[in-house]
Image 1 (tube, one colour):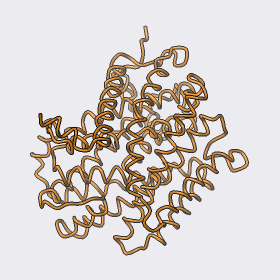
Image 2: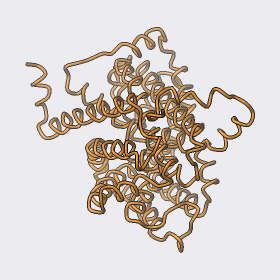
Image 3: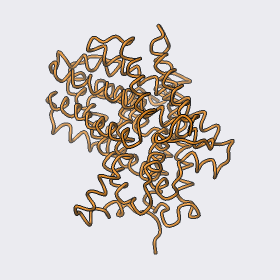
Image 4: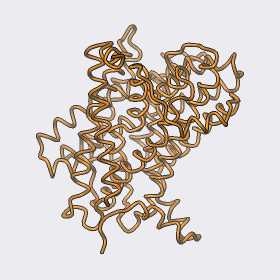
Length: 432
């Protein structure tokens, strides 16, 4: 008797590898790879760069458990989209009511607004390395993003996004050019390293938090629904999720390696991903520096499309409004106006002299960490509802991993909040 989705079912599509199944996989390819890779945005690349620059290879061990958690979480929301044909906001509204949905939407809107601002900050910083002023790069990039989503079809937009995913190869190349000691790197990857230093703990929280963000679950489920993927096709979508998550973590891994083998070894200090790109130039060479900067630009532009788009998706779904890239302004006015307003505000703030961009981005990450456990709890309730999911509910292994992720994220969020409210308290407690 079927008792829910198990880990072994991940391998089911691989039992029949033939031309037909390969073509089916390529046709369904997209939501999983795009969602996971967008998470390596300006904020993500900055976090990974700082982790490598400050702590070398000592945080690489976090990549393996984070990969497992990311795959399980993204698989659950993609499965819900394929089985129910509805987005996550839709399901939350139907199961928990409009009031709960409204508060979740507000929190996510504020979070994503800060994240969207950081993407345009990444565009500005990366192109300034190439001598292009932000007063030219930001408005032009905002226009390109707007035209792509508003004027393009879902198929066209998805193809552009998949091409953008391929550009992340810049980071593995930059890491190999840095010439790290691979035996040391591999050992650090499988050997957990702990420290009683609160700064180290905050960096661990940052690495985990930037890898698993609330917007990802909403966007991926909406993308699965918009692409028309059904439960019958889901075996191939599951592979899309797995491949995308592994690809995203591999990119993050190589960013940490590149910065750890160069900037950390030299004892240099950097504050942003753009600083890291500049620091690589005298250490490794112009080509590695250029690759790193170009990767930052691609990631920022890529995410500047997805984050406002995901925000428009989940708010419209939550409020019961029409949404979808394949629609137009007349068919889904709220969807496209929301997308437009977010783009205009995010890009506009980057052009304001002395705008508190770091404060905005920091607050958004705090809200991000606070909201994520609640989103995961909603997901776990929904995914285990047999009236909703039928035979596609979670198996025991998935529930254990997902609930463990919730508990860890709640604990980490509490620690982060205490450290923000009472600076130095965590360090003093750990020193006792």
